[in-house]
Image (cartoon, rainbow, N blue to C red; front, side, top):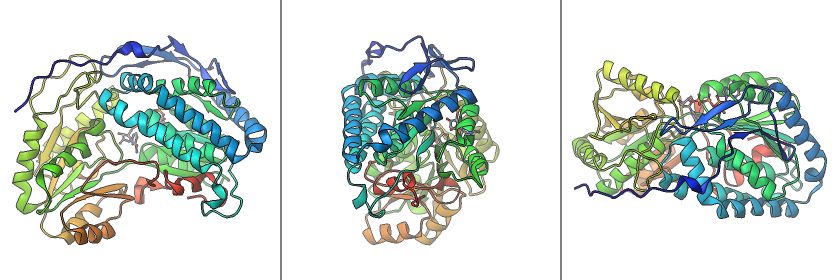
Length: 479
Ligand code: NDP
């Protein structure tokens, strides 16, 4: 049964957005030379602020400031001193977590429950974790005196704006690099609040520079000859463009790209927990997650029971206002992303799969998509092969563990996978077969700063998080 809940809205007044933002270069907000962009709330289409666009000249100023800081105070500072700054950033983020959570939800469309309980605390945890490494680098297993590359160019997407920023900036600072970071054009606001936080932390000017803009600004960072290292998270297509752009240069790169994860359910899996795991795997953050469990592989004998229980559970999801603390599924991040989801859902129907959606009312303004489950999906369908990046689950079946492994690996991607079974030996056997950077057993979408994350095949290369996440920022340890 579904209980009626009274609305429990979080207050938007917790955050004060400026009406316009400049670029954060050399410790100050400065004007950008491109035409300003408006950034909106995707749940209402209301304009939240105007944001500067960085031209190639602005990127050059940012890289010059980052180089100066690298050759100046930051490069000369001991790891123990760097660590104090990173701890200070972590503490300020924890102190201002409510403000950042509200800002993230307003600009991204994700439920406040997620930004409050996952995005912001995990972002702070990354800074706490890497602060601890800054004075212990010589014990990290990368030689007696590991050295930073210099200036890191970092380009991040819109699905976890602050968390991706933390994944990039925390290890870069811990290892002694300086940074020029570009947030996505649809979600720049928490990165700009973070710039304000850096002023509060009194981080030396130029150590972190934040330049806003669209794809051209990202291309100007990747192409700038003063950049030593690129860290990119986003689509496989743009990842390929960047890899081509830097081929033959001294730049090293880590690329964290798309995924099409298999979430594999065996007939002995505990059904209630499994259904929760399936829901968390694909409807968390509206399915806009590179490691989302978007392909459900269910053992044939339990297919009908799992699908029926899943549908019952989906009827209880609350879809709507992301600022309501009861909401489970919020808005899609942009009109462009909604169009992509709608196009792939139509392709699934045209190719003969059967779609099912729970009944729910969607708000009139903003970008919304109902949770969707496709059954009768075959391996060749586009919805089984392409990354949808939305709240859409494709259900396939298998009979034996070997068939499950073969089907799970039948994708150009290899980022993550899930296994649901009560047999430990089967978990270990399956995990060994799966070509995926992260394999979750009887859980899904669990993130921890101490644990490395990254892909195989077209999901990219390099690892972020954990001790492994230091390596891409150290000379001679490119991955
Ligand atoms: P993109 O790969 O286009 O965007 C990621 C980042 O790269 C953004 O900051 C973007 O800027 C920037 N960028 C765009 N073009 C270039 C370029 N030529 N050189 C350097 N940087 C560039 O992802 P989209 O937002 O367009 O999403 C498209 C698809 O990508 C999604 O449907 C999804 O499948 C996948 N995706 C995967 C993600 C993941 O976590 N692995 C994250 C996001 C998307 P801007 O936003 O300003 O255009």
